[in-house]
Image (cartoon, rainbow, N blue to C red):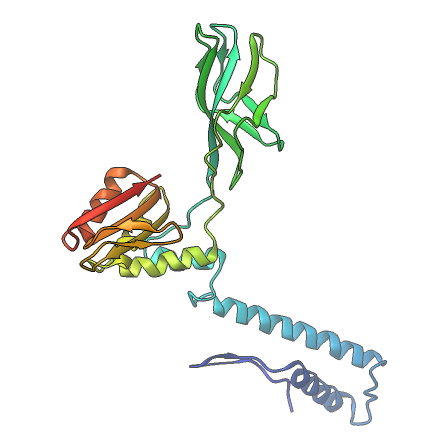
Length: 278
């Protein structure tokens, strides 16, 4: 008996068990060193066989993992990215949270682009453009968190000036920050890939969702149509949707591009279209 190897069949990859590998190794060892070879677990040869079996099984497991990457149901990382490229899709990168802050100080003080302030949790935020304090003693402008991902900042929590600036007294954010997103997950990317196939259709919720979701800058999209003769409500908020209409809610993206794709995919199939953009 020799060490059993893995086999690749039409039903997938089949890997021998550890016990089968160990039995095969003992068969090779006894053939080489004699049938009277001591097989006690405490012997050097037993330890060597245990180590060899672990190496063989590790290589088998690595190959199983590699072959699973060609299946969209299991692929991850760059392997999933490669499947996405077939559909002209790329993974959505993490975005940065943004906020509007108000600086208070002497009139005429210039706050340079990239000036850092911090929030109560220690995250840094950089101004997205140069700002000049007006005669009112205040100026409002945008800041972006230097850390990507879903970084939240409640109102009046971005209040720390990282480096003193002559004439600048204080800073705060009157409203909560717009939270960014983390890098698109494996599950969400696969769902978007599946929806992209439906995008080839027309007059279906899936086709609208798939097409809009693939637009540049779109972070999330929800589509629900009401094909009945009477108005109805959807979701936990009981959002009203008129008869023979379609509701499309979109986060991110360019308004014109979104509207055009909705018109292309659903415009001829609904008497009215309600779009919510944020």
